[in-house]
Image (cartoon, rainbow, N blue to C red; front, side):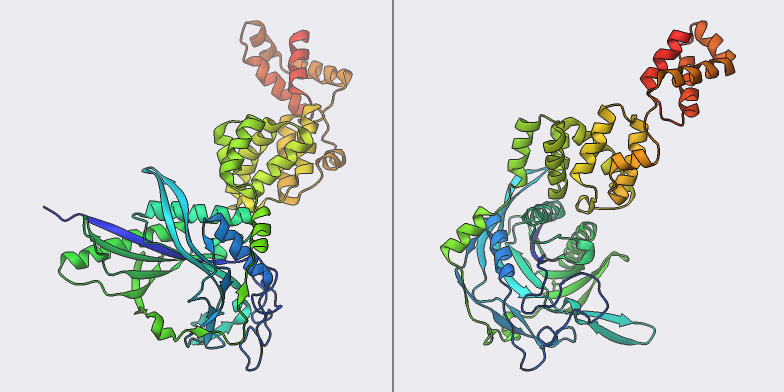
Length: 476
């Protein structure tokens, strides 16, 4: 009988925090920017330059710790992790080994197999390294230190996950929690959230863990899923053929869908950690923790319950709207103005989602303001514009956040409610289409649809279809 294997997975998730400046200096953390322009003596590791801790980094780290049920280490400090790599200008990274800021937390995830708690071993603060760019043409490597010193938290899970599905559920839960806190935008494509996956396999029922490998270079959920499945198969094949799995760091190539060894995995002693002599320990008082706790937002689970009671919109809508804090904020602010939850929800669920998908955008990238969405809904309600004109206006509003009232006015898109002008157009359409008129009189109901269409065309879409219908029936 074939052996049954179980996959054991733990994650190290790096999240770039949304501070305006770096962790130990005043340089900008903005993504992009010409190479080496967001730099100074501190983040390029010049001798004699001294780091100063950014208070906001501590607050974000504590906020994430509280939201993931961790114990906050009230006396914590920074350590130097020594290694030599060209993207690391000081030849060490300032991190936390001995006293990480958060410990022993957990998050609840839900998959097809039900609910499960995934343990969080620790969360520590550290600085990001620079970025190496390999120039194939010149056959050399260039380094950009803009990212060097950008604040990170590293969230280290317990090896509690057993499948790619659980890993994705865990990452989605972390991403949503951190986005709700405003601690990071967690964009995998820009590297502000990166996951290294530690994976091993063992026979079902075995007590001991197998030898693990670490997979790096995973910048999308799809890549993470493929890497886990690919590495599981690779390790099982090795074990089945009597070979052993070597503990090493591997790099996943998503285009070729396979991984290759980068280096053998170092142990902590290889890094010669010691407390950073340039930074004072951080003391986090009870009052400070209480203040951060007080400022925590309403998280998704609570929001979903409240939406059901307060707004009475379908659960499907609630699930999608609360999936993004930015979309939930737009929803709540628009409803506060126009008091029409279902109509606001319809615009978000319909046209907004359609355009986001079409333009490959995230809900976090929505530009239009709640005020403008409320104005658009009011224009439709007062029959100042019809629904097809509203969709046209919404597209422009989605792209440029224009004021719909002004736009409708400038472009002359208001519905023509002048019955005299409308009656004249309807009479002309009737005169021009004797065949359809005859069809309608012979009991073909569909013929009126054609006549309504012709009238709307003649009115350049700016008539109320209901009114056109009424006039046609009356004149026919």
